[in-house]
Amino acid sequence: MGSGKTTAGHLLADALGLPFSDSDPFLRARFGGSAAEIAAAEGADVLHEREAEHVLEELAGERKVIAAAASTLESPVVRAAMRGALVIWLDAADEILTERMRSSDHRPDFSPTAMRARRGHFFQEVSDLTFDVGVMTPEEVLKAVLRELAAG
Image (cartoon, rainbow, N blue to C red; front, side, top):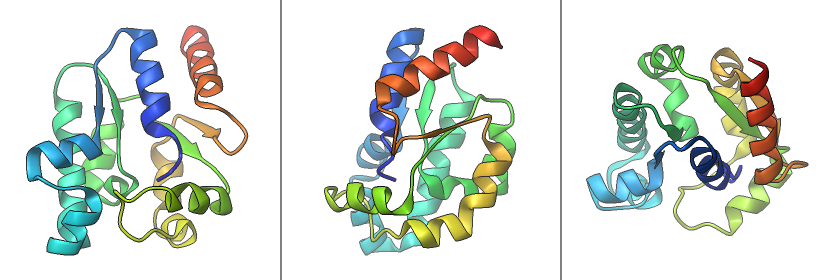
């Protein structure tokens, strides 16, 4: 959602020596289109089911860093599966997320305010760590996560 989850995820995976999985390449490889293309052709519900499939499949496999689409939190099955993982929420002010999404054509229409109203409580429910990427760079997020892991 324009929060830098792919960049921060790659950095974290590299630092921990783990594989990295992102919903966008998963969607292209498995279903032949971007999130926006799938939503336009088959509807948002189908897109969200496929994004949830990504998370569930990756959580069931080997240990890795997963960049999950925000929509996945609407699934109680996904939220339950996330309970066994370290979940990091990369958040920012709505204005920042909106601006970042304007530069991207792979996501469908995006409203951070609507997303937060619909999913914010799910983020709070599952997240172990939250970072404001409006003020932190991906490198700063990496350092903060590594500090938390070392302390934990």
